[in-house]
Amino acid sequence: MIRLIDIEKEYDNGTKALKGVDLRIDDGEFVFLVGPSGSGKSTIIKLITAEIAPTEGRLMVNGYNLNNIRPGQVPYMRRTLGIIFQDFRLIDKKTVWENLAFVMRAVGASNREIRRRIPYVLELVGLEQKADHYPTELSGGEQQRVAIARALVNNPSMIIADEPTGNLDPQRSLEIMTLLDKINELGTTVLVVTHEKALVNRFARRVVAIENGRIISDETGGYYNGQKT
Image 1 (cartoon, one colour):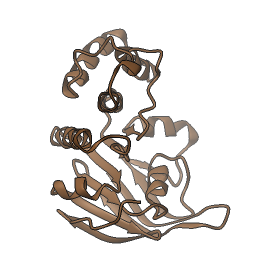
Image 2 (image 1 turned 120 degrees about the vertical axis):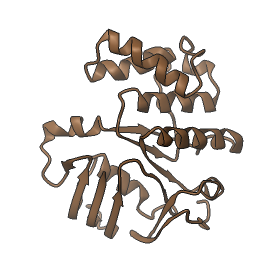
Image 3 (image 1 turned 90 degrees about the horizontal axis):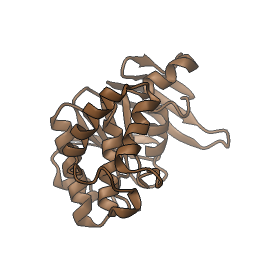
Image 4 (image 1 turned 90 degrees about the vertical axis):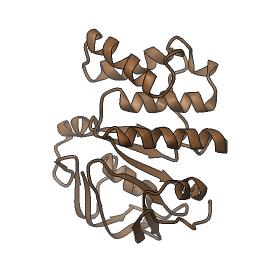
């Protein structure tokens, strides 16, 4: 569960990015976070992942109180999250399998766990035949599927997808969003940050809209009429 209570964030340059934000995301939800550039979306993600700390307010992430979390606990908190980026961030010199194994070894997974888990997530994202391929041999949509598999491989309780379709054409974008929808149906909480209104409106999910550092609407099955920026 994610809980932001009266969150304020002011950066050192005086920019007030968030102004009294209240947001709760329960386990198992699928939530779109939408809004124009500079609205505060990225700040919310950085707060949830403990890249930055709030100026005021209370922040809880999957059982961790980020207001007083010890530095040594941050890596364990982050293991409850799987992050998907717009630019994939795969290691070009490693195969698909090696990219996933690298992430698993980073958290101490055994070779047995790696051999068991990787085929499952590759099948889930439809890339079971691409395990020995390098990222440069894959299409953009396939690379994003690898990035999704990487986010899933350590079995996080929540996936955060930050503009996951920004570099993809409409058909590939729909495929990626449909895959995230499937992952949510299997029990993983999903938070998608996007400004792709056509995609948002295709899925009858909860839509949280933010503008100028404030949440302006929060509706299940909401319609997003924002402008792509």
